[in-house]
Amino acid sequence: MLLVFFLSIISSQVVNDSIPGLLEIDIIPRMGETIPLNLEFVNTRNEHVVLSEYFDEDTPVLMVLAYSNCPMLCSLVLDGVVDGVGNLEWLPGDKFRMLTVSIDPNEKVSDASRRQGLYLRRFKEEVKPENWDFLVGEEKNIKTLADALGFEYYYDENIQQFAHPAVLFVLTGKGIISRYHFGLDFPERDLRFSLMEASQGKIGNTFDKLLLYCFQYDPDAQGYVLVAAQTMKLGGLATVIIGVFILTGLWLKEKKKNYGKI
Image (cartoon, rainbow, N blue to C red; front, top):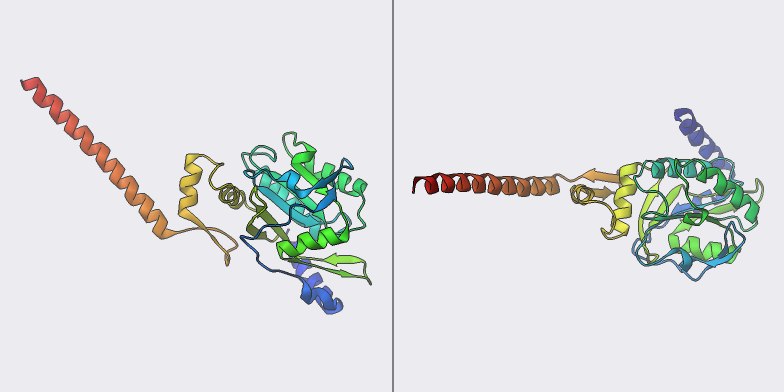
């Protein structure tokens, strides 16, 4: 993995020198904005669908923009996603859905289906195709979705490849952009917390919610970090509760003792 990292740095410098449009590659944060859910695509069952079919008001959606013929980066991103999701206690379809949309308007359904099967087989338990669907579509719809997400990419005619950012989008069940996760590694804790945020606390147990209270997303760290102030507040509350229990126990014990003397 370290070798891949250094190779990616070297290759990115080479690409930077050879592809003028690389400077156009970026992520423009649009957190809080809603993506257009009326966009039409085709799924791996060769069915024409609209994005709204994957959003039900409550269930968060993890979304990746990629394409099947990507020589390296897309595979690394999807590998990171499936590894991170695989460590969750929930599978796609349980508490959230996943969606991969191709940025290549020439990608065929068969290409998307082949890529989908490759990743679904990596889960320990069966995940239905509709719970991590792979979509292809027309360029205008792809571009509209990418613009709504703030995903800026570039196609170089000379090498016939797309240059694009490495990012995982977390959306609410209403299609609102909730969180961006950048890079190739997506820790289980970060995914769990961001899914809980996107569901407005509707998923996750009580302990998860207490942890989320102590952790906040740090854009600089690109992950969730422990917030000392929140931890101290929670610790203080726990101290008070424990103190109440101790005092109540002593009071009951004393009351029982006095009652025995009557």
